[in-house]
Length: 370
Ligand SMILES: *Cc1c(COP(=O)(O)O)cnc(C)c1O
Image 1 (cartoon, rainbow, N blue to C red):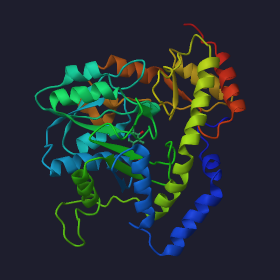
Image 2 (cartoon, rainbow, N blue to C red; image 1 turned 90 degrees about the vertical axis):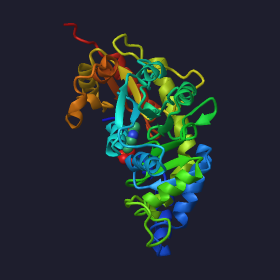
Image 3 (cartoon, rainbow, N blue to C red; image 1 turned 180 degrees about the horizontal axis):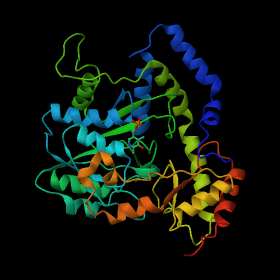
Image 4 (cartoon, rainbow, N blue to C red; image 1 turned 135 degrees about the horizontal axis):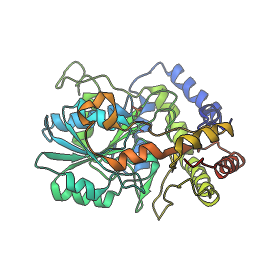
C-alpha cells in the first residue's frame, strides 16, 4: 500500500536529531516556556518574514486567540461578521463562532479552491469587520486582492496558514500578508510536531503581547490577571522538535513540488482534473487534490491498486450538523468541490517510483458511464 502520508518515515529521517533534542529538554529540567520555545519562535518569525511569533497549543487556538485578542483590544465585538471560504476545514469557522462572531461563508474560486475576492466583496455588509482567508492545500489565497478589499472596507485580515508553511506569493510568505496569521504544527502538516502545537505570526507587537497573556491565563505578569484567559502553550519538547524539523522544511517542500510536477505532467486521464499548476506562485502542496465526476469510483479503484487517498473534506461546513443554521445556504461551488475532490499521496518521503505507481493507477481508471 502506498500511504497517503507516512508520518513514521518522515520523522524517522530525523530520528537521531529529534531524540537529541528531546533529551536536551528532559535533562534541562525546564519543560514549559523556556529557551527552546524562545528559539523556535524567533526562528519561525524570521522564516515567515515577520517580527513576532507566539507559540500556542494548536492551530485552532492560534486562530481563536487572535480573534479573542482583537476583541479584548476593542477592534472586534460580538456579532461582527467575518468573511471566510465556504470550503475550508471546520477549524477556521469554529474560531469565528467560538468568539461570538458570525461567519459569512464565501464561495471559492473553482480553480484555486481559495476564497474568491469578487465573491467576498459581494458579501460585505455594514457589519463585516474581518476576512479570514485560508491558504488551502498549500496555495496562497489571492492576497493582493484580499488586502485591497480589506483596505477598502477596513477589515482586519487573519490568514489561516495551517496548510501553507513556507508558501509564498510575489516573494511574500504565508503568515506575513495579513494583520495576523494562525499556523498549526499538527503532525500531518508540512511542518509537523510530534504532538499538538501551533503559533501566531504578526508584525503587531500589541497583538503579540495580548495573545501571550491570553494563552497564559490572561496574565502578562505572574499572578496578575488582566483577562479571563486560557491555557494554550507550545511546550519545550515540541518546540525543540519543531526547531529540528524547520531546518528541513524547504528541502521537503522542494520534494513535494517535484512530486506535484510529476503528477501534473504524467496523469492524463480525462476523467481526472488536475489542480491548477503554479503560475509564479509558490504552492507548498500540503495536499495534491484532483477533481473527478466519478470521485468515489476513482477512490475505490486507487485503493484496489494499493494507493491510499483522502478527501479534504467530505462534508462542507455548511452541511455539518454543528452548523445546522447554514444548511439552507446556497453554495453550489463549494458543494460541487466537496463532492468531486480527492487527495493523492504526496509528502517528503514519497519516492518517485511510488509517485509513478500513483500515476499509473490514476491513468488506468475507467469510469463506468451510467
Ligand atoms: C489543521 C488545520 C487547522 C487546525 O489546526 P490544529 O492544530 O489541528 O488545531 C486550522 N485550519 C486549517 C485550514 C487546518 O488545516
